[in-house]
Length: 430
Ligand SMILES: *Cc1c(COP(=O)(O)O)cnc(C)c1O
Image (cartoon, rainbow, N blue to C red; front, side, top):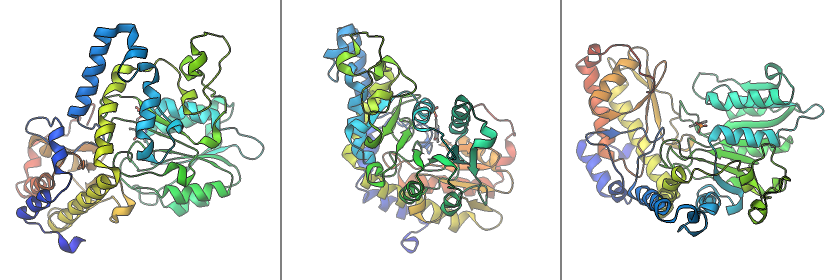
C-alpha cells in the first residue's frame, strides 16, 4: 500500500476527492482555524448530536416530567435504546448493551459481579500500560473482596514500554487467574490487541474476559458475541463523539444474564416493577440490570444523533478509511521526518491491522516543545508525558490534506527550530 502514496500535496487532494466518506466532514462543527487531530480524546460535535440534544432539551421545557414516557425517545428507556442502536457497531445483542454510568463505574460494577475468587483462582490479570483508572478500579475491587492487590493483581509487562505481546499475556494466564481485563487499543501507543485470540486463550483456562474498548469503538469494528467476550466497557466521548463526559456503554454477554449485580441501584430494576418501589431489588436480567441511578438524559442525548451518523456511514467503511489515513500518516512520517535532523520514531505498530485510529510518535529530545509549536499552528494533537505526541485523524471529519499539513508543520518546526521559542511548562490537560 505504501508504494501507492506520495508526499505530493496534490496526492492528498486527490485522496480527499475520491474519499466516499468526505462529505461527513460537513456534519461536524470544526473549531475555527484548527486542524483537529484529537478525536481519540474528545470527538467533535456533529449536527446530528446538536439536534438530538436540542430535541431533548425542548422536551424538558415542554413536557417536563412527562418526557420520561412521552419524549420522542422516552427517557425511561433511553439507556436501553442507545444500547440497541450501538449493538451492531460492536457485534452485540441489543439487550447485552446499555448506555450507563462511566467507564470506570462500569468496570466497578461488572468486576464486582464477575470477579468471584475461589479456591486457587483468585487473581486478576491486566497489563502495565492500561489507563490508570482501570487499574485503580481493579485494585479496589480486589480490596473489596478482602484480598491484597499487591498479591492478587498481576500486570503483564511491556518489552519496549509501548506495546504488549499477546504471547506474554497468554503466558501469564495461569490457573490462579480468575479474571482478565485489557484495553482493546492501548491509549498511548495505539496498539490494537487481538481480542478474539486472547478471549479464546482465556476461556480455555476458565478465565472471565473483559475489554475496555474506549479507544477503539467508533474507529474499529468489534464482534463481542462472536468472540465470546464476557464483558466490555467503553466511553462514548472519544470516537463516538458523544460529548464531554457523556455516559459510557456496558456490555454483558448473555451467558451471564440473571446474575445479580453487586452494585445495585433502582434503575437496574425490572422496568415493569421499578415504580412499585419495593425494597426488594428485582434486577433486569440483562445488561440493563447493571444501571444504578437515573440516567443523565441531557448528557446521553447527543449520543443518539452521533450513533445514527456512525451507523449510516458504516463501521466497516470508517475502519477502512481510518486504516488508510493512519497508513498515509506513517508513510509521510517515514519519508519526511525519520532521518536527521528530524529524528521522529513511530511507536504505534506499523501493521494497520494491529493498531486503532491514532499514531503516536516520539523523539529523543524536545517532543514537548515541538508539540507546543504544533499547537500554535492550529493543530490539536495531544501530548502524553514524557515524550509522546498522539495524532488521531478521525475518519468522519478529518481530511487527507489535514494529515499532509500536520506533517508539513512538523517538518517546518524542526527546519526552523521553532520549538526553541516555547517553554517547558505544562497545562493541566494536554
Ligand atoms: C477514556 C478511557 C477511560 C475514561 O474513564 P472515565 O471513567 O470515562 O473517565 C478509562 N479507561 C480507558 C482505557 C480509556 O481509554
